Image 1 (tube, rainbow, N blue to C red):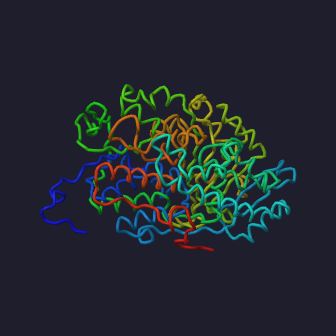
Image 2: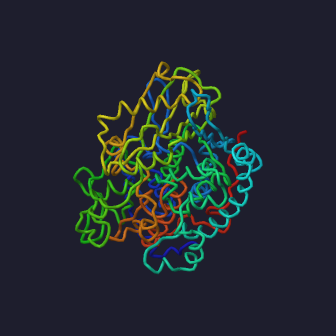
Image 3: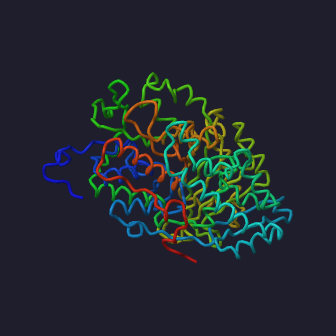
Length: 537
């Protein structure tokens, strides 16, 4: 309904909102707030948008995702684009992968005639059953019951992922009480999977996804069996041009709606009047704002942005320092002067010492025979490397910086270990073919990209750090400050971060009386089944 000409709403100035950081959460918040009538300014310390979801490029013509390399469950972002008058399909070319990825299980020494076992993970249930049956015929019968159980689990837990947790009363609302038995807080992902799959390799096929949270499947709460379910139920997608293309599209839409994005503009702190935020300090000058949205890494940014004495009721510097954090990652971005035929788009190489590796990482030790993830995006996307060349992304889980192993002494050796491990891809020693190389080790995540403790997956997702016990979407310690990103509820992972941005901007819109509420899930949205945006066989 249009307001009459005499309505005070017509003369009320649009509220100013400052967004610190142009990562996925900050960009989603900027889009939704601009669409809701706010005057939005995004302050980004780097020269590009996307945060860790950005594209790295080299003079030789290679392009790499910095962090996330695949796109899950596009429906949430599709709804955000729609709320902002845009179509995700028109802005980003998403390709559904089939098979989704290749799992390579090492057993013994290949030189002794023990080749690795492989599973090409498929969203086609009959095909996936056949893949599992090659390893364990009995376990193939557990696939469909696993899917049915997790479909019900996610449906029960979905409302909890779509709302804020502000007070203790939120922990005993009906949706939470309904979901609690299915969450099985007393169990772990691996233990829960053992009811369906006896072979430990098959369980790893449905539990390595806890690494998306930087956690061990042997400690991660049983709730998170929904991670692998989401992949098989809704697909794994590749954005042409890499995941940075999604960030670029979000920035374009936000700017079309009037949001201003200031690159190379670090925020030095949040300005307060008492406990209420009144703007941000940029270059020694306060830029006024009626609300501030923090998308910077929580552990790294909050101690710098908000004085500790204003956080005495909650997330003090001491509490942030004593919190539990995810693992880190050791990254290799390799430009090769050859193609890699037969190598899948996504490859997960699972060491025979997988469980031992995890224990070493948790103790702050650098593993000798690590598991690793390798993206060969050229299997799908020809835009990321010159013709006849390959852009190879290698991620090795590593300890965070809580214990702080001496990476200056170990970095060169760990590079050699990772390059040796790549031989399992079937193309021998790749060293002679490297034409471009960049390493990002755990200390680099902290110093170059502002990741607290180098914990690339943020605060860990143990039950004492979830829901009400995670930093609030409306930051409870002060007034006028809101959080988006992996450090707040619901947690890490792109679709979850986008959902978190909807929660946060919904609270902010209500607090500021914005004329248009941000996108909210409907009975046919949220985490329900998604129609593939584009399919590729």
